[in-house]
Length: 444
Image 1: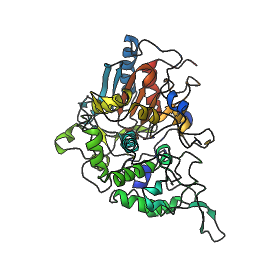
Image 2: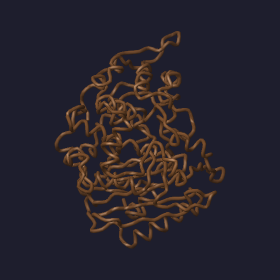
Image 3: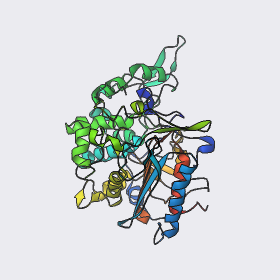
Image 4: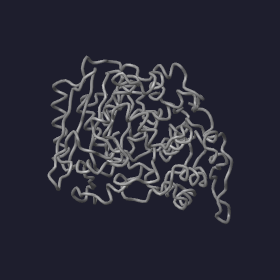
C-alpha cells in the first residue's frame, strides 16, 4: 500500500484509503474504451536485452548483503526476500528479526500484514467474473451497484460555502475502479469533499461492504471519472461488486476461488489463534528517532478478530511462500500446478496499462518509475530513465503495501519476487535497494 506521509496503522479508517508514500528526496523513483489488441499483446513484452539468468551468484551475494545492510542500518528490524526464476526457486534470504523484542528471527513462516498487496488479489477475483461474462469492464459501475447511480461531482462552493455539485461528464465504469480513475474522495485533506468523507466514514470496520458503498455514494466525487489518477477506495468498491455479482461474501469468494485452489493456506483476514505467535511485529521509523515497535494491540487489531468490513484494498496477511504462489500463478499465465485461476489473455489484460496519456494528473504514481496502471497493478511501460529510479524490465507488473512490502512479476525474464518487511511509514528506498540487488544498479 503506498498515500499520505503518515502510517495508516491504528488510525481513523478513512486514512486506509490513502497510501503512505515517500516523496521528494525519498522518491526514487485509454481513453480507449477497451485496450487495443496491440496494447494487450505488448503487456509483458521482452526487454531489449534478455539475460539468460537474472539471479546469478553475484545477484545472490548482492541480495544477502542488501538484506543485512537494511537491518544493520536501522531501517527495519527484519526482512526476507524470495525469488522464482524460470520455473524454480533461485533465492530465499532473511535478515534480522520478525520480533526484535522477543528475539524471534525473520523466517519463511513469518506472517506479515500485506496491506495493499491485497488489491491484486481483488483484481483477480473481479477478472474471474469478467471471464464468466458476469461483469464488463466498460459498463457503468451503477449497473451492478445502483447505490452509485446518482453520484455527483464536487465543483466548488457557492458564496455561502455550500458545495456546488454537477453531474459526471460520463458514468463511472468498472475499469475506472481498477485503475483508480473513478473519482472517489481519498482522504480528509481533499478540497471540499474531504470533510464530507470523514463525516460519512465509509471505511469504518463496523460497516459491511454494502454499507460502505452506501456511505461512499453519499459523498460527492472529487473529480470526474477518468480525468485523473488518485489512489483511494475504488478497490474496496470492487470487493463490493464481486460480493454483489457472485452472491457470496467477498472473503468467502476469495477463499473459495483463489486462496484454496492455489493452496494459499497461510493467507487470511483473521489469523488463526494457533498461528499468531508467528506474526511479524510492526515497527515505525523516522529519521528523528530510533525504530519503535507499534503496540501489538494497535498493529494487529484488524487481523485478530472478524469485522463486518472485508475490504478489497487491504487487510490480508500472508507468509512469503503463500504470496509467491499467487505471483507464480500470474507469471505462468493464470495457472499454477495444473490449477487455472485466470486465462492467459486475462492476465495480459491485467498487466496492460489502461491509463491514457491524457491522464496527466497521476498524484504520486510517477514515484514508482516509468509506469502506467492496469487492473490493480502498476505496469512498467519504459525502462528506468535515471539511476535514481527503481530497476526492472519493461512489461513487469507489481504492487506494494503500507508496511513497505513488495511483489513483482517480470514476464520477460520469467521471474517473480516477493519482498517482506514490516515498517511504516512506507519506505521506497527499500524497494530501490532490493531491485538493484536482483537486477544490478540502473545503468541509464
